Length: 326
Length: 262
Ligand SMILES: Cc1cc2nc3c(=O)[nH]c(=O)nc-3n(C[C@H](O)[C@H](O)[C@H](O)COP(=O)(O)OP(=O)(O)OC[C@H]3O[C@@H](n4cnc5c(N)ncnc54)[C@H](O)[C@@H]3O)c2cc1C
Ligand SMILES: Nc1ncnc2c1ncn2[C@@H]1O[C@H](COP(=O)(O)O)[C@@H](O)[C@H]1O
Image 1 (cartoon, rainbow over the protein chains, first blue to last red):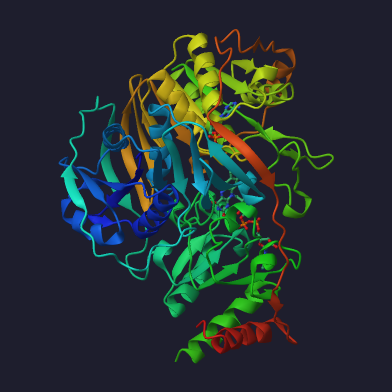
Image 2: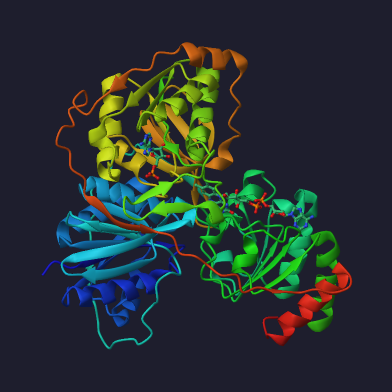
């Protein structure tokens, strides 16, 4: 029976935080497809040691593509690994996470395999012989449902939109090394630079995030966001307006084309709430909006809000939080 | 350096959510009155990057778009910004083209244009939010592709050094030419068309290529749109009010404590 292939990139010799939800959705889909086998391709540098941790997640087979190169694997190498896995497994469905390098890996792979692809999906269901794929479009202003008529079908999953499987199964996956064909070396990785703060939580894992927007007025005011995040032990985020203006590095961008986050508390200052920003925070449990425009879209998504100039609100808010947290 | 840039015409992405409507029967967006479609934002950044490379290294910039009659306006805008030539792929048979067929058609058009050193696309179109068509074009043309690109650091006749956004940071990559890049918005600020450009755009002849011109008859897609709809959302916000905004700030902190969020 044609199975499900899950492709996960391991970065920094660690499984991506989204691997559990990828496997959760992959195994659920496999069951709906009548108990199809689930294979994971684990690709990256020094990833061999991670393979054994995948068995208890309900996976039947793990293919390991271990890069020996001194630099991080190039997009071409990852594509060659993914293509080799797809040719070996001949799956009906291939799933990846729509984050980081996997975003374009999924699309490049689909075209290589002459397959249809839907990216950044937020829900999957099986209807008859079709997989119905829900995907936000027009920045998130509308939802579309697609089906794919080719086999395999390639889908990338929006981070935090799918549940991981809680109950571990007592299973052991069969682990096999995958040999990756040589690439022509047209793309060479010179170096990889990590930008996010080394102190405090990383944006995508943070329980508390303080995000700033264009309404802050300029880079000199950014310390207000940082101070608040620090007091709350949270991470700092930003809108594209802010990252495009160069006030902070692009890796702090939250939204459709930035990070997808799911904190318990997401505090916004001077953010209008454009649909493309909201696309990155639909998993946030409690949104707080500080904005001087009472009609700003962000208030539709907020649990608490204050309408007014942040310059008057935030210093008092920060001070009071300092007192409360002792 | 001869560069081809793919530019797509899209509904204005800044249409406020309250004005965003779709026709579920035809599965299409109903554009609000008086709001014209625009050049896809990331494609404008790609065009700007191409124009900068041309200023630096010489060569020619050609823009290609697949779309209905109105896409001509977007091509004219590209010429006004400084593109040397434009091609419009326009055929009723391609009106409903999915991402598979779109990539095939654009690749065929680029091939028909002749030799080039570089193809620049946007990283993503703001209507499909797909982020995929350019990677399909690269596959069909047998080009190495890098996306999303936030900076072109160095350019010579046969290679580029670029920065590609990855989670938590970026990679510096050396890419051999010819290649295709998917451009992101951090890279530059697209220029406004100068008066000279606007006049050139007025005079420009833009050839139209059909599916038959590109050998695409009978091309069938692989991705079917089954349904398009809008989910409405009711605000449930608790607005914190007080005599002064300072007090509102304090009260907000107390509320968060009460709700055990801080
Ligand atoms: C294809 C595409 C992808 C995109 N991807 C993303 C993405 O991933 N992430 C993202 O964030 N954006 C993204 N965008 C951009 C998005 O559409 C918006 O332009 C952006 O999010 C706006 O950022 P902002 O809220 O900081 O700025 P603005 O929309 O300009 O809002 C500023 C807000 O600050 C308020 N304000 C001003 N002064 C004050 C003050 N003194 N006190 C209090 N409030 C004040 C204003 O009332 C306003 O609401 C994308 C756009 C497109 C087309
Ligand atoms: N119809 C089109 N005409 C020209 N370029 C397109 C078209 N569709 C997609 N592209 C290019 O491919 C990129 C990615 O598109 P998408 O996969 O739809 O997000 C866009 O930014 C454009 O540069």
